[in-house]
Image (cartoon, rainbow, N blue to C red; front, side, top):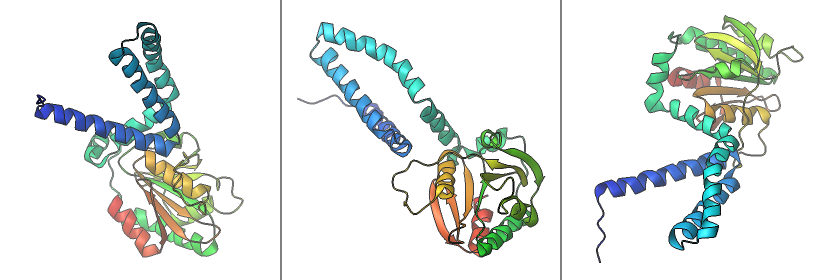
Length: 253
């Protein structure tokens, strides 16, 4: 017996598999993997009972739960759904859309990169902790709202002054948008990725977390080791020198 399978059927299966795989990765990174597995078990149980075994009473109960459960899932996973669309919008292939709809289209140049590099290098030598997030193709306005507005030109002295020990704004992250320091003391989402080394502190986890959701570069200066790290796309690059940091900021812009 031969099955009548068309190319569209194969494409359909592949797309569903990709969707499930992406949802699996999203739930794993957010720490909700067990909930996701439980939902899959419930769905397959509902299909088995209602469609295959055709149990009327139990099937009707599960049907009602499915109708209400769809709305419940939206409420439960509203943050994950929001992050999904953020990630989709920040994808490299769709980055031009963010640029098109962005109000500010000023490109960065060496005069904007070098003050950040020099400030990070100086703070690393003095073991002053810092966390700086540089916007790329996706707006960081949601994060800016969590901190104190600055809206100033980028300068080495200003960056170092913000993160100076016991300074009012040294806690939290500094946000750089379109060649200007727009805010400081901002709160970042922390990554829940279980594969992150336990040796990394809250600053590094926050840097990874914000780049998992937003299209940005997060720079971390460790006050314990005096090392510089940069997070891009949820991946952390450690032990950077001034030249390598400048290269990352220039190329990734």
